Length: 110
Image 1 (spheres, one colour):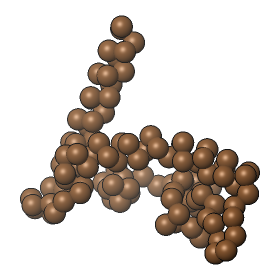
Image 2 (cartoon, helix red, strand yellow; image 1 turned 180 degrees about the vertical axis):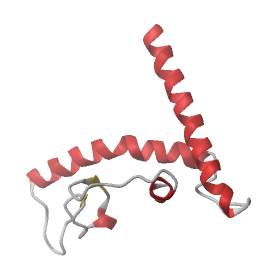
Image 3 (cartoon, one colour; image 1 turned 45 degrees about the horizontal axis):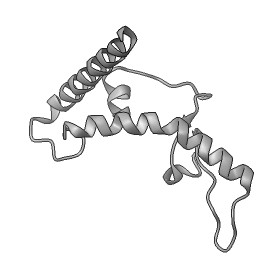
Image 4 (cartoon, one colour; image 1 turned 60 degrees about the vertical axis):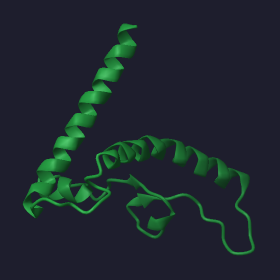
């Protein structure tokens, strides 16, 4: 989905822009990743706390990705023409945004 932001929307990120990722992105300078336990050693309590804070920030994004995958556009083989993928995924994201806005407005009115 980030590729769609780059290609379709023309988003450009500054060199100083930082992202949050999981342990798969260790080594990338632009991505903040959790501390990884090395072989035959343990991580410190401070590192465990930092990992917990990082994961609590990441969980909302992970939940949004899960909502997109419910529509099965991003998780299964795309069966339409390739040039339609960006339109479909942006429509799914729009539907998710509408749903979230409705849920938020309902909780405010209660």
